[in-house]
Amino acid sequence: MIKPFIVTLLGVVFVGVLAQAQTSPTGAPTDPQIAMIVVTADNVDIAAGKLAAKKSTNPKVKEFAESMVRDHTSVNKQATDLAKKLNLTPEQSPTSQSLKSDGDKMLTKLRGLKGAEFDKAYIDNEVTYHEAVIKALDETLIPNAKNSDLKALLESGKPIFVSHLDHAKEVQSSLK
Image 1 (cartoon, rainbow, N blue to C red):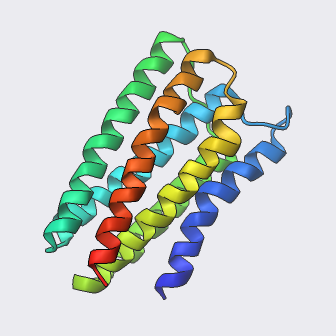
Image 2 (cartoon, rainbow, N blue to C red):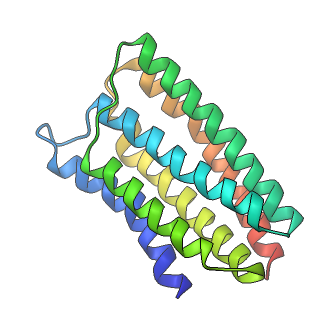
């Protein structure tokens, strides 16, 4: 039951971003679409982190979840502040809508799990999610960002996602 759940999330972020790149009129997501993808991806991880912080009894999982909420909230604030500064209105796209929908499905599945099963599903998802986000940043979002400030924000955010991935893998290995 958990494996299809993880594959679904991988498809949400990476395949969804690539599908958006293939379906937009210019062949790539626009800056307003990229901004909404970033905010939506952060919100998905914030919601999962809040759930894990409340539901998990494992101190390592709780600490990781709390860091996801803190760090992704900070990235969202930076993205929102930049959008205001640039007078850029984030724009919905099939990718951001898919991220939101599949994030909601993920939360529903996580809510149905308990104990070690919950911890494993949450952390396994975080590893997969951050791998997909890093790949989407490298292959789609950063290369297609036209505004230099937006591109700089994406580039400065990447090390945060890399550190999250490393942290998630560390917690994942402690759960085995």
